[in-house]
Image (cartoon, rainbow, N blue to C red):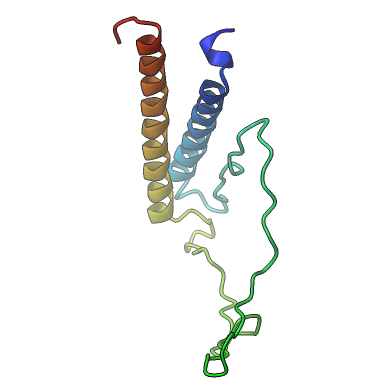
Length: 135
């Protein structure tokens, strides 16, 4: 069995490939920030391959265990109304690229990549130590 076949290294390798693809797409978004009609793109959320996800429970509502507890607004509509505005800004050129958001995504992707490479390097170091070789 090679090191790349170990589950942790395989997952880290997949994550780094996903981050590389995301960085490429985000760079294209920034490059086309002034292109009229261009729509910003992003990749689907990363899921570790071969890992069974634990199902999340349904909506959890608070329970009043005492008569003096406040009722709150759990499960009801907000008393202040609902904001139906779009969550993204459309620039005058009618494209959906917001440079501030794209740059934050790029920084987040870079930090995640640095973390993944750090974990990979530390894992290799641990294996070398376990084998009695100098790291």
